[in-house]
Image (cartoon, rainbow, N blue to C red; front, top):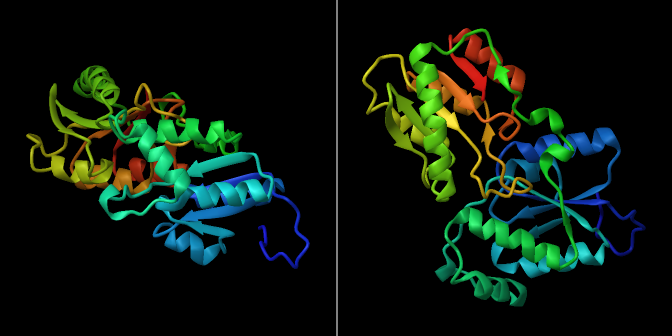
Length: 279
């Protein structure tokens, strides 16, 4: 970790990790340590509480003061930035931005169509500042979902039909920057992911299902999504929510979706007779 105490001699890190909520930042930090890759940790204020407890951050920045984080990273002469973790979108009415953030918001105010649009424009703004944005899988390539059957159980004939239909629908929804996931049962779309997130959408689908065990969660990447900073994730909480909702399994876009705690996810799916397939 980098110390910002000016009285201490420090070695300049090669990577700045800007972290929000979730588990991926933990994996990245540990892998950087394993690889001997130098890094500094910047945490978004109000996020990553457990991460802050385990790893002392080098800098904490408010979403309204992104200019300060940019100055910090430039001052320590870091070029590579990795932005990772879920971020709670603030109300623009309640923030007092610094100059850099105010200019950024003014630039995008009339051109934003959704969260992905904001992230994409933020990436381009950081690149204009001279930074190189890298993705989590550049450090953790094994997190990407492989293609094919991932556990012991296979989708049945109806599930396979739903996967084919649902994948096309999910891509259309994603192209409109609405969400990354849908739930489909016997050709009928039960739920579409919106602001509530995947796990809450799965819980909502339970009220709409016709069969005790049936239906498929399909998760894809949006066609315009910037994979470097906003790649979709499936983890143990997702597969548990699928089980609780009485779904038959999950179909995940291969080489696009990250799977956290892979062995635990597959083990749980096998134990509960759920299928997981990379499509």
